[in-house]
Length: 630
View 1 (cartoon, rainbow, N blue to C red):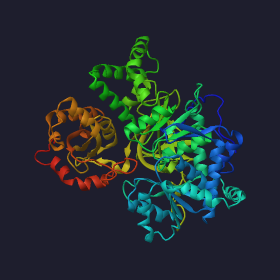
View 2: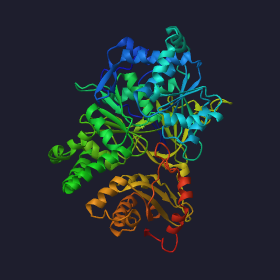
View 3: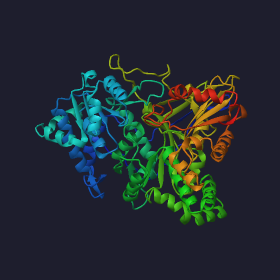
View 4: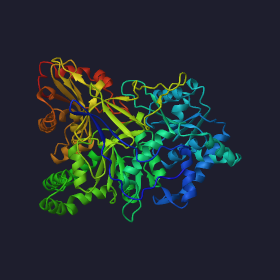
């Protein structure tokens, strides 16, 4: 098996379009690479070590915070040693190994070692509750579990009575990797070779559990072939990202959870393409900024929340220095430049003027060398995408699900269209059903939902399409727009259908807003519950000398309510009057994973919010709730 290599940049292939009643209802793009016919992901470390043993695949930090490289040969040796240790502990081909840790080198090492031993990996979010963890370990039938620290070990140990199949529990912080190395010393190298030889592209590689917005998470059965179809086409299409066009080799710093399929897919893609990877286990502002400054990646993967934070922090810094007006002018110029296919001479000159004053500082905050960001998880929004493009950071937006091994559509290189999630990833077809639901088809679409007793349950239509549950539309050129979730559509008492996602996405981009949930099902009009962003609110209070006010007082402060109302008014421009937000309530509590209102991937658990804030919602529709801020 060979590593994907790209000799020159790929010109995006125009989608093949199917029109119904004059409207585009289906688009497809042919695969850029043939499907892998043999082998598995377990072969990648060994292929890399054989073909380019000195290639730096990873960078790790030493005790002094300095980065040092891990070569392809070293990584393969680490994988091999740990794989032998897993075999020594009696794990058999097809056994499930759960992995609960933050984003670290050891996470990726265990992942590939488990594959080399013929196992199936089961990611668990490190922030998962005892109930969530137990459910995933039970449902997957995990025979072993690797956690990061003693606290997680205690959490799993407390559930062992209800996990009779869990034979092994190891913690990385207490020497799990060394323990496995030592145990594997007595296992012959040929044992790993034999295990790898049993794997085919269609072998189950991993069970990735959905985030569970409406109930218990479901295990998505992803094969080695699913990952190959995804990463090989993505690497080939996004040539400038994975194959550096400058003297600086491509490199990325992973900080999103590897428990999520988005981060996992990019991690596998980087090993496949031999892109140097660093890991940042903390996403706290100062720690992450320090890691970005020292590692200096050439591209990043992020979710809109991260991009919003970068922008809002930069503006707050400018405001503290009395330069908010200059920053706002620079932002307008960047958006015009980023949204233009042929910027005028005047616009190019204005952008050049603000580059050293504003845009270079944005790039410096990302490490100084970042040219590209792959953004997914939810819609970034045209204003932010255009701003970053104008600031010299191209954003590739994508759309996908756990069931599709991450991206099913992506912004085509040099053909961006803000407000959309791009064209189908090569090898993918997208169809809009009669009710507006997005259907997908391609080799990256999963085998089905895990059911240990009955086998994978395949949720396809009779003609082989996967219904996503998302609503969307295709424009005349085949670009996909996502407008919401079928199950999230609100129907007011007047019979008006309202998609909450566009309003919520717009409001979350505001520096004062942390989370927002639009309400209106079976109600006379639409309202919203809004939580305040801690950093944004702290800055707002400091600038207006209102540090003495308690949070409950601030939620009634006329100036703050006016600022949020203006943000609501801006969001309402996206929709008709019947769909607009007529009132809102500022909450003194946060929606968080800990509170049970967000999933680990920061998606709203709407039922939980409706239940826990029923009183606040009813008050918005009472005598004093006929409109405006409450």
